[in-house]
Length: 80
Image: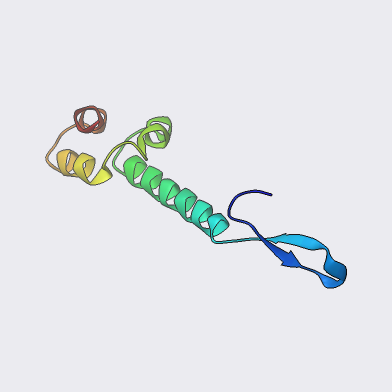
């Protein structure tokens, strides 16, 4: 039985796994990742770089540098 699952008894004594909050957390993590990718892409980074660094860099710092005239790729390089 995967961790985080609780057995739920069914009629007749059989057990079925119930879903816990882990699935929601995974969906939430994916949503945050996608949002970060979109923010980095909006700043001018190519999609592949945005995807690679979405969870490894602070997009706020990248945005600050870009707003001050720094090219997006250089801003990412500075921040990471």
